Image: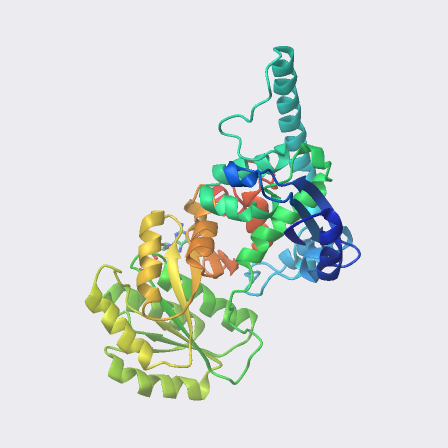
Length: 413
Ligand code: GDP
């Protein structure tokens, strides 16, 4: 769903533009006269703000289509190798309609409360001011905002997600389903578009580099990926570890390589990379490269990383970060690595997080895409390609219970 605000002299002047951009099927969410503010506003011509929506996203239409929502159960039966490295497809996503009832219940509660408060205020013959912590004129939009804040979404990010719905108020009489879809697609749009490993490519020797601070779960993530790529996708995987500062890291990866029967090479400095990479590329569909865990505070270790990356030009790069790291530190880490190369993010340890807001904050404010998430220590089960719809539902409180969907694995262990 696309939602857009149009501003112009009159409704009549704006409608042709809306129809041209959004089509005949566009839904008008609200029509508002723009208030004249300030001294000069008095002389200004009146203007009107129209918020309109249209279904433009086939993927989302698929998501919302009830009849397609039955597929996930069948996919999940493929355990133990159900680890899903593919992007979410419409048929693989559960229906937003199913979750709407939860939110509608909440919305009704909130609306009743607001109505009650308003009528009390009317009884007291007072005007009905917005509560100081109420930012939005429509109770449903306010409910979205409050829910996102509870999920640790930063106020700036929540406001960005709701930006097209600012001017909607109770008078707009808009179907709440349209509001839900609008906010939901705003989150999904911010999160979608990551670069995933192509699991269908045989014989093309893709090279994937993993970077990140120490202890975030980089080596475990590579073990998870190696298992799934080998056992589920039948790809020939080769491993290179340049994480030679930590003997345990080399041993850890060697153990997984032995179990899976994979060729593994150890690279002690950048000059050795080329030779090992050529050897593995000649016989593997995919080469996964583990780099040494680096502190973003050390300029020298960042310089070493850059030298290493220069020896692997044609590679996809992932920065592995733990969602449990303080948000300010995460920003510094992303900034520092961003100065060396472009990358997508892998968020680890979602099972240890109370909420998923940090993931949304980092992607939205740092302009980065998250490709995969990990949510436990089980190799390979506790990892999947990010599912923007799953995150959106969690951030909007469209899931039953208090916990976010990736916290489940923690509870079952
Ligand atoms: P590295 O230093 O970045 O290579 O980190 P490791 O792969 O050695 O992992 C560090 C610790 O984090 C280990 O105890 C892992 O089992 C644990 N770990 C890795 N991924 C996850 C995850 O998704 N959730 C949890 N709870 N622990 C994880």
